[in-house]
Amino acid sequence: MSLLEARGVSHYFGGLCAVDDFNLTLEPGELMGIIGPNGAGKTTIFNLLTGVYRAGKGSIRFGGAELIGKTPHQITAMQISRTFQNIRLFKDLSVLDNVRIAHYSQIAYRPLEAVFHVGRYRREERRIINRSMELLAMLKIDHLATETADNLPYGLQRRLEIARALAVGPELLLLDEPAAGMNPNEIDQLMELIGWIRRQFDLTILLIEHQMKLVMGICERLLVLDFGATLAEGSPHEIQNNPKVLEAYLGEEPVG
Image (cartoon, rainbow, N blue to C red; front, side, top):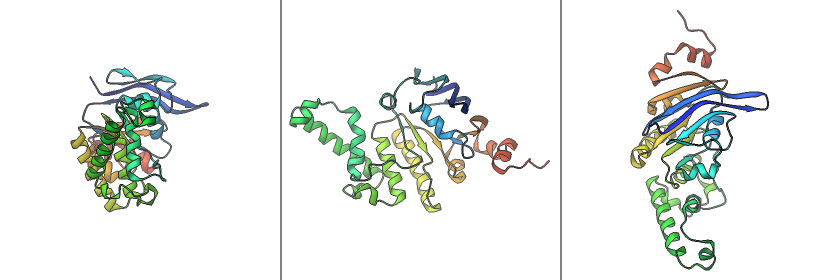
């Protein structure tokens, strides 16, 4: 069984079709990228997969379970996690607290135990702090645990957002333009980080990205969107040499 299957998915904003008959199959352990010009519908697809939007047509199944109609919270509980194109950290909180927050969807203690700090509360809080520090150490930002998130350089904010996404224990990780705003050196580091995360956490990864160096360097398969419809799908080499893709990106007919 495929891990994620989208079949005939369409979504409209008023009378505008943002996603048209979208199909996707993602196998366990794959690292796949979705690319396309601005406004092609890439982030809309992530919002459909995570319950932010509800598809008007079609089916989205994860591990055989239908996702359409579920809330973002329910989908997160099914072990799907994401980052955002525009970083969405709790910028006034510490680095550690940003990761701790992500664990609270899985807490085992009751509200009264939290109020009076009894029962399972202390044990669970200790576990959450220890696990959060482990994740920060894995992403090499544990030395910044007490720093306010807003004070981190841009590249480290991206790392923190990934650490928070990993805190929910995902099986599928969705990365929305993780290289946005990064310089070439940071992109190289990010490529290594994504590959390491995939191996370390045994993840399936689906990402959206404009940086061709990144998608061509780490993705095994690419899907190209244009005006909400799938233009092409294949290996990075096939996509690089696809005339339709060249025309969509460059606005030129291929020579010959």
